[in-house]
Amino acid sequence: MGYNFIDSDYIVEPFTFTTTQKIHDGLPDFEFRIEGVKVLEYNSIQVNRLIIIAVDGSFYQEFDGLDTRNHLVTVDSPGLSFDDWNFDGYMDVSLWKYVGGTGNNVPHYYWLWDNEAGKFVENKDLECISDYSTLEIDKENNRLISSSRDGAWMTQTEYYTYQDGQIVLVRKEEKHFMLDQRDDWGDDYADLALIIISDLIDGELTVTQEYYVDADIP
Image (tube, rainbow, N blue to C red; front, side, top):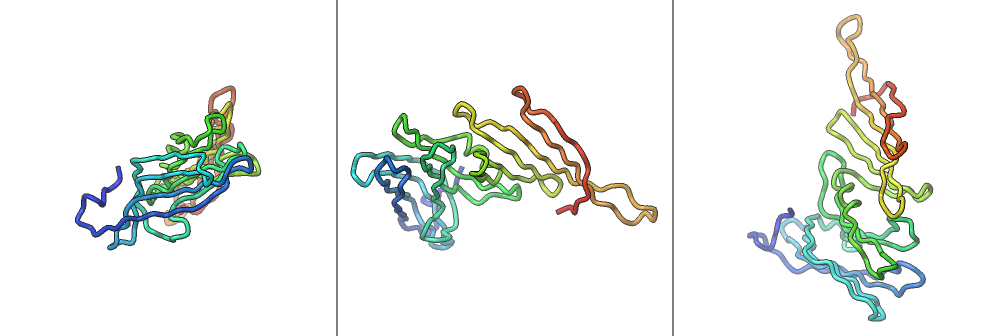
């Protein structure tokens, strides 16, 4: 749950940001407007509403009750971004929720254009993945790549594809850092990493490779 600056003693002022984006050649340009408050002491913003309007007046959609808290990095794009997250040829919209932690997570909201329904639909699966990782698009291979870490001792990369409209985890690569035995002098440690690779086989994620490599512990 985000911190509600409106109910605090911080000095706030209304904040809005509007940009126009074409999501497909067959659709009118859309105007995307985010609304919230700016916390003056910290030059940060809390967004609580996203409004989407077709510039020709043919479309209106609103997402309310949003919960974000971020630094106002730039007035050009304060956490609002556009990309094709499900590879269907239509641009989707995402909104940065808040600064992540040491797990390299970058939490976002995601709304994907559903052309059959004629509207944007919130995608909880992408949101959940971004809650614990950095989520990126691999356009060359039509897949999503999720990167995260568990403290200093494990990093993880997951690969997702869309199957029948659903996000499916098809591959996981784990790197577990560890200390090997002391050398003959009893002084030094050799840094190793255990690599575990799992692939989706017959509907189940199955370990397909497991080996050690030399590695510097990050």
